[in-house]
Length: 160
Image (tube, rainbow, N blue to C red; front, top):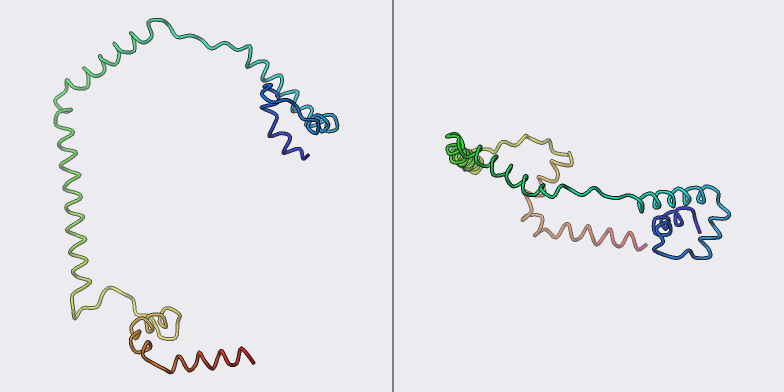
């Protein structure tokens, strides 16, 4: 087995969750680096087994609830807290309304007949110009048999 495959199994092996397989044990005997890493994992797991978590005070929950009630009372006693939320909601609604109006006005400017949209002029012969020409003349090209004839000629040349 490769060292990476063995190292993936170290946490479970060191914790004693799985038994060591013969090929894993053989690799640990032959590879000093993996054996050292595994020994460190075992020491870490032994320390974690000895560790005891601290228990919170028996009055912790009571004091926390009292502190939360005090903070809630402080926040709602100011006049600004009563005005802040409606003012914030009204300002956000105004921003959305202005954005919608600007969007509609710009959209109407772009779609008025007789006016050019704010597009830059592209020179013919460039890739973008060719794509725009194909897009603008799609109906003409779709009805043209010339393109079909060219495709047939290309297919015949390719088969020869």
